[in-house]
Figure (spheres, rainbow, N blue to C red):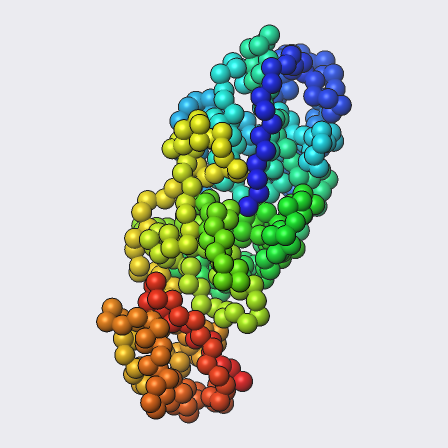
Length: 462
């Protein structure tokens, strides 16, 4: 997850019709405009492209990417609804306007480009209020892939105004080209998706698609400056076009695709516990999702279900639609901006999300409960049936949910005791399946999760 470096507020005198080298003197008008932030953009959604306005900004046309034909999109502005003041809501609206207006001027000492600033009446907007509104706009609109979390805030006491300068990771020309590529990738995604899927099936399809088509870039873990030269790792473009991303790219893409397919989804920021060579590493910044299905919320973490090692088991999806209690075993959710004090805000290392879903306590759509088998003691026939079902779907993993009378590890051990029920079930399943696709002599590869009563076996296809 990216660190946010909000530039310290400073009191300076601003010329409201000037922004460095990118602003130009306005042309004559019959009805003079007092400042460029009062000017409307080009209008509704049009073809991807750009034009220049009379103040020297490059205006990228608002565009709606290709939509799926069979499902009604469901983009809910959850973070906007959490904003507490009219000033914040004004910032949110102006950000969605100004982020389509690009300057050629780079931010001093940075690789990003300035966008048209947000100008507010009054100087009583704090950096915390401004940041909450800007992050709310970004969280509600992951399609704005070019916007950086950085912003400058300056107060002009002479004119009693506040200026927020937004940052873009790319130039206007780059954004237009990237939009075309994203649109092509989305069109291909929707064409390939099976028709008449339930909401749960659509969600699983998106989840699997991201995992199967995207690779986590581990260079980010070893080089703190790597992100500066690879901004697409954090956005929709990285997943859909480059197919390389980090947790932000995974989570924002999952959010966008699910919402396009009619599923209410939000991003959740926090920290996660990693384990490296047996040593726990805490406070690792992370981003994941919450999903609403049939009126109930679930937690989901695409990144953590994408194996980063060829030896890890694919297709288990043990973080898909779990409860917040299970997620809390190794994830800690941040507070919202509304929940943190000003003193706590001063200690923040990164941005935080604005919206938290209701309690995630349902289990109806938990992937490993729904797709796996339940077994509290060795049962060759039941295990055989589960193996057959998994093989017929060409699933990469077999999930066994242990009952309350035993632990996952104890059940797993019993599958290899005595007559070894595991291998009996594999042999039996192979006689049922066409072409005997299983390598019944292969060593069993599995993981045991005692904290959730789950065993995951890798399916031993030939």
